Length: 483
Image (cartoon, rainbow, N blue to C red):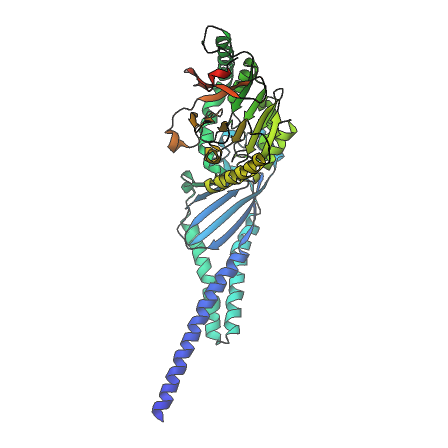
């Protein structure tokens, strides 16, 4: 009898201890969740309004979101806490006042010293919301868990204490080990991946823009004069009596490249300009304000979107009179052009997706093949952004134009001319691929027959290295078509 009673009491004690332990664990887990749900608020930093949230996490991280450009991440502390900061709004008028007053230098906008000098609003309220609100929510969670599981007062009190202490301690460790200098080597996401390269490119180029523009105009006029001389090439000189098309790509808001394109189009008397994407850098609406100065509106422009484009950028191009070709065929001055947009351009993002690009090409080719089967004429040109899209059209169409890689190339595969005109942006986005080398401004002049249907005769490929050299190479595709 005494042994059975002892065994019963032992089992009851073990069960009670297990329930108490489960209660405490549940209180901590639910307390952390409650703390995270409550620990958020807003903070004004100068002209910016920030949404801030704090939550325990498996790894320490601070994430600053800058929509729609992307985010910046850095390991700024040691505690198991994630800090999320999102820029909700910026008062442009207030920013201008700060710059005008000298309180904020435009060249130091992102510097820690400048940010530290900006006035804070709502800091006390944010502190109470994060620490006080988070702790209160955790305490209530611990209390409810203890009461729901019907544990004793001591267990309930310990559950409340642990529910508050664990997330609060994590935040305390993060605060004590905070090191803002971690943002000197951040991880960039989204469009901000390109930010360091853009800063470097623009800082070194802005002072040279007028000189480079003058060089671009001179190069274009000199080339036109050179090819206007009948003695230049026995195969036709400037090929008078031809229908000329200018192919450009990947301008990336570069004013020098735009000036070069306009000069070449005028000098060669191009009848059509085909641009295979990436006029913008990030595709955000603010960039469209400069489109009018970059697009040569007197010459018909057919634009096939690239991965840096977006609905906003394409809408702005349509307003300027450009023909934006996302899918299908358009005929411009007797030239039949079949275009396929990079699928990323249909949304708000710029990261290329090779699988989606290949799928889009296959789908477009299937539509073209069906159209050809029903008697529709073969297009004179297929225009795409990424060369990944070339494959389905090889052997079926006479010419495929592309860009994206920023490296010019020319080849003929199974009777199809594959032409990538490089870039008029003149900036190496992919530094690993380019090895920090300076990229030339490059474009191509395509010569077609004056008679319809248009047939490709020759291609002039032009490369201009700023302040260095200019090269022109001509490939005659079909000498029997020379006028």
